[in-house]
Length: 303
Ligand code: CP
Image 1 (cartoon, protein in one colour):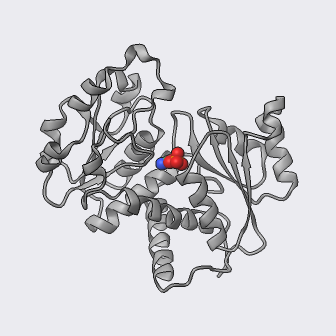
Image 2 (cartoon, rainbow, N blue to C red):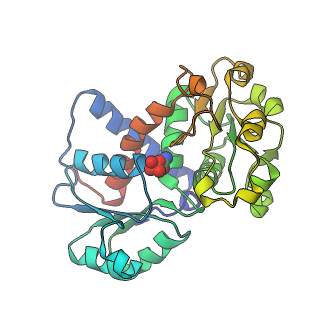
């Protein structure tokens, strides 16, 4: 496959190949080899129409560690403000020699459209409420490194599933890798299609926590929300927030994950985010490694 648009497109073998490649690249980094010559002469374009800290910077770091040239494009300050379309923007960047385009866009399906217009590889860095496949891969990589394996592990994903591309990609990938996923959310923050997803649904966080190997907290995405269907912050935190009391109900070696950015004090208490059980910072480090693996495999870099 030339593109990475959806976690649904990854077979178990594909996903394991990416995770194993990332493991090898992590071993190289741990031997303090900072830069590999693998993608010398290749150009990666970061095409960001929506804000990002982790994904944009880690794709840039990943491409640079593989010696690729990187062009960073952000819609703010570009000719998009003059009405230039996604297609014309993409063709302009391709004319400058892009071998891969990493795209984040507020519209679900934008990376899929883009893949019809450009010759290079398209990597989905988050499209609307649809998917964020490299986030799911870095989360799976983090779980595998910490827990030793994913098969049969019980992963609970909590919060604003309705607006979460991270939740959808994680449910799909974790199911492919043999984990048992449970979503916990207020009914108003679940998509109507959730019954077709390969996972369980619960409304009772306290009942699910003691049976979880991993609890993944989702950001409440107020910017995508109509205030009318969101409970008060205090009510949300009381029912669905992960605080110190709830942390104590998790099995001793269970992990606490969050893709970031976090709303401290809303879906996750500050002391939980900063606790030794939290993998939040490790997830960011693993994000660079996973994105190196994906770029390496898609651009077919020869060592
Ligand atoms: N997790 C994640 O996608 O973060 P950014 O929005 O900062 O890229």
